[in-house]
Image (tube, one colour):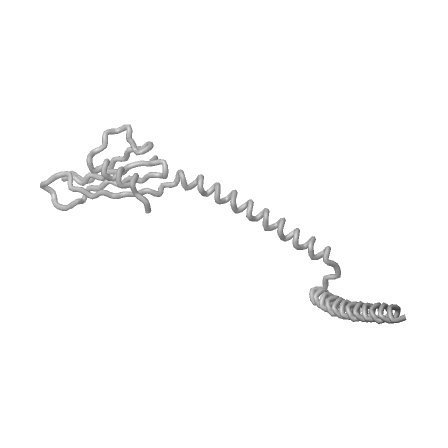
Length: 159
């Protein structure tokens, strides 16, 4: 009889513990559902599926915009390679008897060292202007020391 009483007390105690856990889980679940209901009512959204679908649409739109941005950047990089970005100016005096460094050379090159050179020589009779094409840092025409200096400064320009 004592054994049956002990088993009865243990089973009753176990049932009481399970009842307490069940009540705790019920209250916890009720509070969690209440919070979810409040959250869903504020945004007028009735279903998590709607939330997920709208988020997916936003992500798809952002993905397309990022892809477009990368394409534009790639195009701009291509344009920059052929844009004149290296410029140098060298002033000089071609004749000792005239005052000041009024003559000059301007070299204008892209990233591949292609471009042109403008030389202006100030002489007694007036001003003479010459231009020469530059391909990969070289010219098909003979370059003066000042013109070579202007081209080399432009090639080494890192601004």
